[in-house]
Amino acid sequence: QVQLVESGGGLVQPGGSLRLSCAASGFLFNHYTMGWYRQAPGKERELVARIDSTGSITHYADSAKGRFTISRDNAKNTVSLRMDNLKPEDTAMYYCMRHDGTYWGQGTQVTVSS
Image (cartoon, rainbow, N blue to C red; front, top):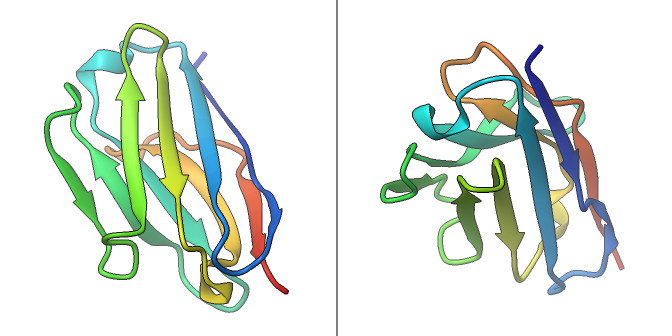
């Protein structure tokens, strides 16, 4: 069975950093584009970043450009999101998702507050 397990969320002050990780299992990880999505209270789920199967091509939401970095390690079946210079508006539940939309994880909460 496909499993996506996120970790690394928490409470951080504005300007701080977090690194989110997603451990994948149950499918051929290196065959799929992966993405990080987030959903804040009262808002729709949005794509934050995605990375192709080889890790060669990445895409970021405008709000994440220059601050977030997505990466993957196909040998370990993991995809990560480094988040720098965090802002209160980054507060959301963050989800790891197979980009075909078929599977997603349980989410990890990121709260940015002073």
